[in-house]
Length: 463
Image (cartoon, rainbow, N blue to C red; front, side, top):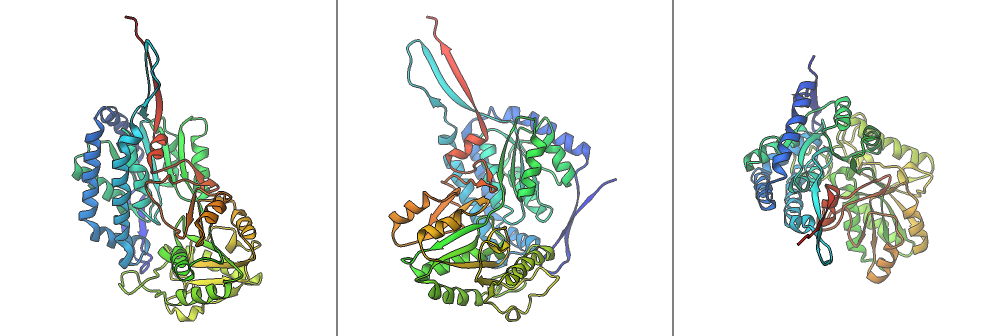
């Protein structure tokens, strides 16, 4: 009996699309085809792979507006911002295409009389990419393009909330002329996703999602001796020093907290402000939040869309309520945002003070349009609080003294450290997390090391 995938749009709670889930025969055929296609693909020269991937990127650029509308209806991002994701996909993909030669070139060893020696980057085989809904193209492209450039085959399983992203990738690679079987997608149930991870034909799993999802991946690969790349949760902090450019800091950090309705892995979820500028920061931050326009994301005037589903909004409400019960102070009147209604994905933004680390709002991932602001008396107090987390994806400090900022950055437990910016991914830099934010690395030249294996060549001359 076939199963169906149903995507409910957060825009109006309607059924946006339905798809048949892959059955066992389809899954096994896809795995076998990927294994077969990869054997030929890995022997193609890098310049050919780069050309095909570049043509696929061209497809996304050409279909940007249609893709933007699909993003809005699938996961609720305001249409005024949705096309930015295609811009980001293009930047990341073209960067990785440019870095491929450097990232994949053989490692040359110092000459030794009578010998030739080098280390080759060999493709792993078939990469299974599991992508989330919150940035359906940006998260997926991080692994897909470099995996293909490295000579691997890719099978993509996308979120049930954003299945059209998988289909668009397939269309892009087909339009580019990628050989059959090198890239495929499967719409899968959770159970079948786990079975694919366990399959002998899968050589690496690239997963972006929740901590619990990452735990499932690690359990599924146990005993298979294959690699995994896990980008998981975050509770990313920002510290506003007394010497910060306050106007720039407020605008940057608040955008980092509320863009995409707070549904960003590296979004700012907790803010620490030096006591000398705390009152001024707070007043400006409250004004910034109040100018947001909550509404239907297909309305071009909307700057804050719904969360992905009503249950996600209810979870955020529960964290806010728990903080209030423990003494937190609210600064935004929910009644000022008429669309915010219990039982719907539409949720008013919120800013909380009088918060501390006994509250979930400052310790557990929220993934919604709310941020806690805590006063601190020193750099030392701020660093201690920033590090007081089970997560470690990004951290940001706002300061006019770059040398002191860098010195403080060395003390932070994080994968990416920012000064005077946040909530951004630079494809020239390694994207990675520590602690419960995951492990592995995507993007930059280092990203290729995780999608290949070293193979040493040791040749002795006999004449």
